[in-house]
Length: 124
Image 1 (cartoon, rainbow, N blue to C red):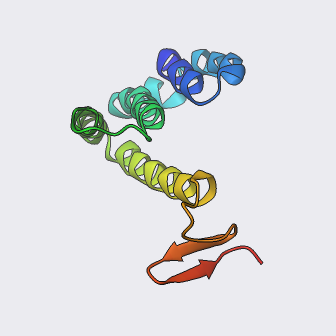
Image 2 (cartoon, rainbow, N blue to C red):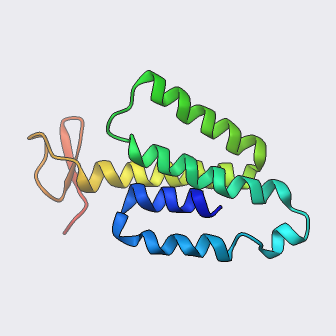
Protein backbone atom coordinates (compact mmCIF):
# COMPACT_ATOMS: atom_id res chain seq x y z
CA UNK A 1 0.00 0.00 0.00
CA UNK A 2 2.68 2.60 0.81
CA UNK A 3 4.57 2.02 -2.44
CA UNK A 4 1.48 2.20 -4.63
CA UNK A 5 0.30 5.38 -2.93
CA UNK A 6 3.74 6.95 -3.31
CA UNK A 7 3.75 5.94 -7.01
CA UNK A 8 0.32 7.51 -7.54
CA UNK A 9 1.31 10.74 -5.80
CA UNK A 10 4.59 10.86 -7.73
CA UNK A 11 2.67 10.63 -11.02
CA UNK A 12 0.03 13.22 -10.08
CA UNK A 13 2.05 15.82 -8.16
CA UNK A 14 5.63 15.38 -6.98
CA UNK A 15 5.25 18.19 -4.45
CA UNK A 16 2.66 16.18 -2.47
CA UNK A 17 4.89 13.10 -2.18
CA UNK A 18 5.08 13.48 1.61
CA UNK A 19 1.43 12.41 1.77
CA UNK A 20 2.64 8.94 0.78
CA UNK A 21 3.53 8.40 4.42
CA UNK A 22 -0.20 8.00 5.07
CA UNK A 23 0.18 4.64 3.33
CA UNK A 24 2.42 3.44 6.15
CA UNK A 25 -0.24 4.34 8.70
CA UNK A 26 -2.92 2.50 6.72
CA UNK A 27 -0.80 -0.60 6.07
CA UNK A 28 -2.11 -2.41 9.12
CA UNK A 29 -5.73 -1.38 9.21
CA UNK A 30 -8.89 -2.76 10.75
CA UNK A 31 -10.10 -4.56 7.62
CA UNK A 32 -6.79 -6.42 7.34
CA UNK A 33 -6.98 -7.51 10.96
CA UNK A 34 -10.58 -8.71 10.48
CA UNK A 35 -9.50 -10.98 7.61
CA UNK A 36 -10.52 -9.01 4.53
CA UNK A 37 -7.30 -9.84 2.73
CA UNK A 38 -8.70 -9.48 -0.78
CA UNK A 39 -9.79 -5.91 -0.14
CA UNK A 40 -6.44 -5.16 1.46
CA UNK A 41 -4.73 -6.50 -1.66
CA UNK A 42 -7.01 -4.54 -4.01
CA UNK A 43 -6.19 -1.10 -2.56
CA UNK A 44 -2.54 -1.08 -3.76
CA UNK A 45 -3.64 -2.49 -7.12
CA UNK A 46 -6.25 0.30 -7.33
CA UNK A 47 -3.65 3.03 -6.78
CA UNK A 48 -1.21 1.34 -9.18
CA UNK A 49 -3.83 1.16 -11.93
CA UNK A 50 -4.99 4.73 -11.33
CA UNK A 51 -1.40 5.97 -11.39
CA UNK A 52 -0.69 4.05 -14.60
CA UNK A 53 -3.75 5.51 -16.28
CA UNK A 54 -2.91 9.04 -15.08
CA UNK A 55 0.64 8.76 -16.40
CA UNK A 56 -0.34 7.61 -19.90
CA UNK A 57 -3.78 9.21 -20.33
CA UNK A 58 -2.60 11.35 -23.25
CA UNK A 59 -0.31 8.73 -24.86
CA UNK A 60 -2.59 5.68 -25.11
CA UNK A 61 -1.28 2.97 -27.43
CA UNK A 62 -2.50 -0.57 -27.92
CA UNK A 63 0.27 -1.93 -25.67
CA UNK A 64 -0.46 0.56 -22.88
CA UNK A 65 -4.18 -0.09 -23.18
CA UNK A 66 -3.52 -3.82 -22.84
CA UNK A 67 -1.40 -3.23 -19.74
CA UNK A 68 -4.13 -1.04 -18.27
CA UNK A 69 -6.67 -3.80 -18.96
CA UNK A 70 -4.42 -6.20 -17.06
CA UNK A 71 -4.50 -3.75 -14.14
CA UNK A 72 -8.30 -3.70 -14.41
CA UNK A 73 -8.49 -7.50 -14.42
CA UNK A 74 -6.19 -7.76 -11.40
CA UNK A 75 -8.36 -5.24 -9.57
CA UNK A 76 -11.53 -7.10 -10.55
CA UNK A 77 -10.26 -10.44 -9.28
CA UNK A 78 -8.93 -8.99 -6.04
CA UNK A 79 -12.12 -7.16 -4.98
CA UNK A 80 -15.15 -5.96 -6.92
CA UNK A 81 -15.70 -2.83 -4.84
CA UNK A 82 -12.22 -1.52 -5.67
CA UNK A 83 -12.77 -2.43 -9.33
CA UNK A 84 -16.03 -0.50 -9.37
CA UNK A 85 -14.36 2.50 -7.71
CA UNK A 86 -11.49 2.32 -10.23
CA UNK A 87 -13.86 2.35 -13.20
CA UNK A 88 -15.77 5.30 -11.74
CA UNK A 89 -12.54 7.19 -10.91
CA UNK A 90 -11.04 6.72 -14.37
CA UNK A 91 -14.33 7.70 -16.01
CA UNK A 92 -14.76 10.85 -13.93
CA UNK A 93 -11.09 11.90 -14.22
CA UNK A 94 -11.16 11.25 -17.96
CA UNK A 95 -14.36 13.25 -18.41
CA UNK A 96 -13.06 16.16 -16.33
CA UNK A 97 -9.73 16.09 -18.17
CA UNK A 98 -11.46 16.36 -21.53
CA UNK A 99 -13.91 19.02 -20.40
CA UNK A 100 -11.66 21.22 -18.28
CA UNK A 101 -8.10 20.85 -19.50
CA UNK A 102 -8.12 19.95 -23.19
CA UNK A 103 -7.59 22.65 -25.81
CA UNK A 104 -10.71 23.58 -27.74
CA UNK A 105 -9.31 23.05 -31.26
CA UNK A 106 -11.55 25.86 -32.49
CA UNK A 107 -14.73 23.83 -32.06
CA UNK A 108 -16.14 25.69 -29.09
CA UNK A 109 -15.57 28.79 -27.08
CA UNK A 110 -14.33 28.72 -23.48
CA UNK A 111 -17.08 27.59 -21.16
CA UNK A 112 -18.83 25.47 -23.78
CA UNK A 113 -18.65 21.85 -24.77
CA UNK A 114 -18.85 21.03 -28.46
CA UNK A 115 -21.46 18.39 -29.21
CA UNK A 116 -22.01 17.74 -32.90
CA UNK A 117 -23.13 20.91 -34.67
CA UNK A 118 -24.16 22.67 -31.47
CA UNK A 119 -22.31 23.65 -28.35
CA UNK A 120 -23.64 23.35 -24.84
CA UNK A 121 -22.70 26.00 -22.31
CA UNK A 122 -21.69 24.70 -18.88
CA UNK A 123 -20.49 28.04 -17.46
CA UNK A 124 -22.92 30.89 -17.04
